[in-house]
Image (cartoon, rainbow, N blue to C red; front, side, top):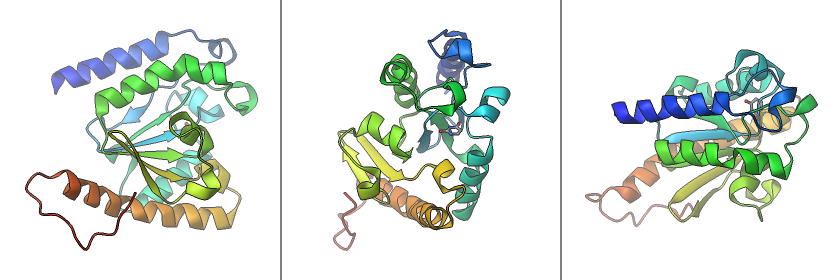
Length: 203
Ligand code: URA
């Protein structure tokens, strides 16, 4: 466990020290944070203004909504790990360019390799397209998808739901599926648990 923590500290240091093409236009790189032993990782797009100022992911208005959605299922941000596709704020919060996403790819890969989450929650289309480029958020949100060893749950980005009460309701009800999905994944991976004939298929 100490090794895992050490490796995480090393990774955070590398992310902070890395000078990517976005770095000149932002205040600092924003590594993921939270519980590195969590079975669930939440992935957003990239830091916004407040995140850039404070050096932590999802601490601005979208972060407040993410915390509200987590609290709706009895969780807090310290229970889970939260990160982004790109670790530096794109100018004026524009979409990250493919080359910028590519440049930051090893960091997200290393975060996931270290944490080995049972479930990866993709917040919005940038996170979705990082893993499942052919999928459309409007068609796939609210569902789980398996790719090899990785299991994803897809929902809207909290920022999209900030000023749209309908999207917020959908986001909140999507979140309600996450704990059950996690229990199902635990049961499926447990060598002692019997098959689950009554369990509806989630994939
Ligand atoms: N939006 C994101 O995608 N990530 C953050 O950290 C903040 C806002």
